Image (cartoon, rainbow, N blue to C red):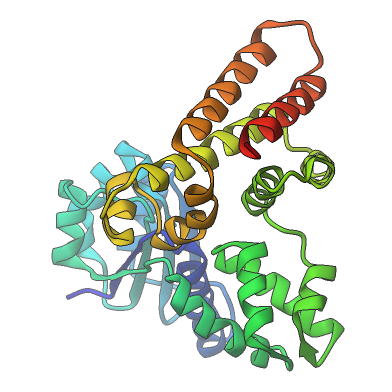
Length: 312
């Protein structure tokens, strides 16, 4: 088999980190980046084919990285028959995160390449990874702070790494209070906290969370979409009878933790109330798109109505 690698899967951060390591290893061993070639789906197929099939002339080897080729039909049609002609001195790395496993392109790569899937880490895996990442940055993080960081930053490994670096730079030991002070919650976490406040009768805090979202330049329609998604999650959980979290997550395309997290509110608020709240969100979406009223005012009025519904 030729030295061809296919990296795919939704964890693009891990895949690109692996590509970066390969590039570093290559430049360290050759002493330069002269034989390094990088392409994407936007490049001309002829240039890519030339890079992967030509025997290196001015370096002992070459490394060719191709990003997202399946986004260009002419590129994969040109590449497929040429992969078997890659010289021994050339290493080809194909990063195709969203490759369709049903296609002839994927089947060709299965025959010609070493295939590695970079799957997203589970919540449990991330909770184990966070202390190791903190240690790498010269710090420690306790369990409570790690869980809170995951809530605030979400399961985006790239953002988690950035936030850990920032936290570690501020202290040798990271606690939950430091996370609250230095890490801005991701918008979906803020939406959840906003709805939790409304269901508890705290309209003032809910309006403050709304202001936090606006300060991040998130449009009112995007805020509505997130509100609708979260209320729909509550409805799914509230309507489920004797169905496991895993099954619910699979049926509705959600993660099991999303289901678990929604349970306290979903079990506290009646299904009919949640349905009314969802209809109010849809009505506000329509009003923003069709009326002359300020979206900001319509959204604040929606929160007031949701407050009345959810605390019943």
